[in-house]
View 1 (cartoon, rainbow, N blue to C red):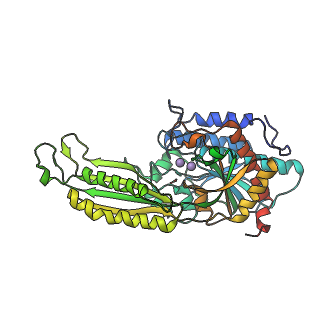
View 2 (view 1 turned 90 degrees about the vertical axis):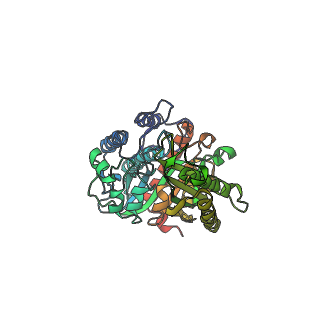
View 3 (view 1 turned 90 degrees about the horizontal axis):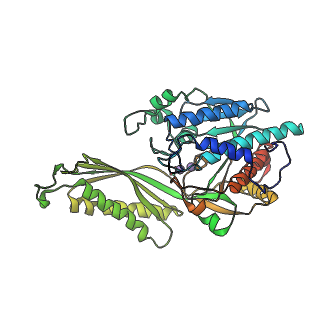
Length: 426
Ligand code: GLV
Ligand code: MN
Ligand code: MN
C-alpha cells in the first residue's frame, strides 16, 4: 500500500491500492462481457454508492446527500472554509464500460484522502477543505437528460423537474432515489473550485502517445426528442398509397441525420439517432408512432446551429413522402465554452512536475464539469482510452495511466486546497 503522506513522485508502477479498489468497484453491476450495467438509482447503483459511503467514512469523511441524490464525502480540515470539490459519476450506460465516470470518482476519493493526509503529516493547514462528489445520473439513459445531478446543483435544472422525470417504466427519479435511500436535504458544500478526471473516450491521446489531456473547451451539443406520428394499419392488406407509416418516416429522418455528418465540410460534425421506441411494435402492424432521440455535436457552435436548421428543413419533405407528421424539439444542449485558462496552467505545471506528457484538448463528450465550470473555477483532465472505445463493455485504460492520472489529480487537489488558483490571473 502506498503512503498517502509521501512526497509526490511520478509513478513508475501502478498504485496497487487504487487498482484493488477499482476492481472492487468494477464488480458492482458487472456484466459477462467485462463491463458494467449500473444505471442511475438501480440496485447496482445502490450497492456502489453504499461501498463509496463506507470507503469515505472509513477515511474520516462525512457523507451527505442532497435533494437529487448527489453523494458528497466531506473532508473538513478547516471548519467553516469552502471546499475544493472533486468527483465524477458512478452510474453507467446499459452494458457500459468500467471506467466512464467511475474512474473519476475513485481517483477523486484517493486524491482527496492523499491530499488531506499530506496536510496532516506536514502540520500545515490548507486554505480550503476538500469534498468528493458522485453526481447522480450523469449518463441520462434511464432518466433524461444527462448530467442531471450537476445540472440541479448548478441551478440549470429545477430539482422538482428532475425528481418528477420518469424512466420508461413510469418510475420517477424521486421514487427510485427513495427506494435506494440516497436522497437527503443537504444543500451541498460552498465550492471554491472543482476538479474532475475522466477517460478521454476518444483516441487522440493514444494516437499521440500523450498521457494527460487538459481540457480547455467543450464541443457544442444539441439533443432532440423526435415524435413521428402516422396511422396504425395492416402490413399486408393496406395498399401502399394509403399507408402513413411512422417507422418509414422515422427511417428517413435517421438517414437525414447521418447525411448531415457526411455532408459537413468546414467543421467536424458528429450525429446519431441513438434511441427509438416504436408503437405498437408488432409484426403485422404498420407503426402509428415512433419516438427517437437525436444527438448532434460540433466544435463550432454556428456550424452546429446551421446543421440543426438543415435537419429542421428536411422535415417537410419527410412528412410528405411518408404521410406522417414529425415533431422535433430540442431538449438539452450546451455551447462551445472555455474552461478557465488559469486552471489549465495549474494542471499543466503539476503534470510537468510529475513528468507526465500533456496536451490541451476539447471535450466532445459531456461531463459534470461542463456544468460546474459555469459556477466555480473548474479543471478537467483526461487519461487515454484504449482505441477510443467507450459506452461499450470493452472500454479500457492502462493501469499505469489510471495511476498517473490519480497522481496528477492529487497534485491538482492539493494546490487548489492551498488556494493556488485564487492568485492566478484568470
Ligand atoms: C454525456 O452526458 C454526453 O451527453 O456526452
Ligand atoms: Mn462520463
Ligand atoms: Mn458516459
